[in-house]
Amino acid sequence: MEAVCWHGDRDVRVDEVPRPEIVNPTDAIVEITATAICGSDLHLYNDRVPSMREGDVLGHEPMGEVVDVGDEVETLEIGDRVVVPFTISCGECWFCEQGLYSLCDNSNPNAEIARKMMGHSPAGLFGYSHMMGGYAGGQAEYLRVPYADVGPIKIDSDLSDEQVLFLSDIFPTGYMAAENAQIEENDTVAVWGCGPVGQFAIQSARMLGAERVVAIDRVPERLEMASEHADAETIDYADEDVYDRLMELTGGRGPDSCIDAVGTDAHGVGLEGVTDPVKRDAKLQDDHPYVLREAIECCRKGGTLSVPGVYVGRANVPFGAAMNKALTIKTGQTHVQRYLDPLLETIEDGEIDPSFVVSHEEPLDAAPEMYETFNDKDDDCIKVILTP
Image 1 (cartoon, rainbow, N blue to C red):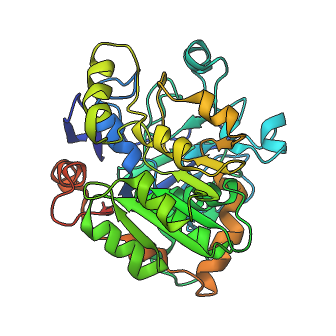
Image 2 (cartoon, helix red, strand yellow):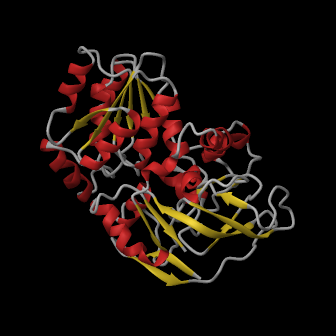
């Protein structure tokens, strides 16, 4: 089959690879009808995530039709149309029983690699390094889905792929980010990063009752999308000081909640925008934590900082400010399975149409070009769907 494969820094190719087969009796095989390029994939594209190997199949936002199931799969049948979460979860360990699906104890066969770096291993992930399990991803014609009774959600309606595909990751990720922000009535929420996750965090903040949402980015089409679809106030950080503007908007108090939807590859301004890359190149830190620092400084005293943006390792942040301001900090990979049913209902009820973020839809063999376009933010690119 054809699959999008990693070959190093800014080098992805569409290769011929073996079609997956049932390995365990709890597996299913899905023929992919739509798959997306995620902002997190760009961390791999730019060679920021350790333990990648040449030829690894990328992608963790897939959906399609079930074409084979293992003998112990009970909830899926051949012919079912499903969306597949990016988190792989067993459904039986202590963490899964608590609804903490991205922290599954059993789904990462390479848990020792992650434990050495983090202290404990999170769940296995599709297409996201050997530290996270080494699972082949979903930017391919077919995908093997472990623990098939726990992950995929069936789509029984005639909703289009574009409307439901993002249940695989970015819609639940944005929603969990807003939920973690502990939003209360009349709150002001600031969201750094207006890429796809940021757009869903902004939408979800509105859904959860935020009175004001402030969207921060430097890309005009992303700021325009946040304003048009969520009536967000916007700050172009290339044109004005974010801290000063947020203090002006909030009477000096600061936003009640701040959401970092950027993560490891944040682009800073001023001195820190120069020193962060230098520190990473010198192995003094693993991330560009510019946004994280700014969010800590901007958040009101006693406020909440929510971090859905992916970080890799060490980051130099003003933790003293977070402590002395009594901030609540909530983070984490998304517990996708927890949100699938309620968020599908919001789509079916017409409360939200997630397809608004799609800017490009291309065949799978256009993946190398579209990775470059998405990474460079060319051609007004916000979200890419690939169709095998």
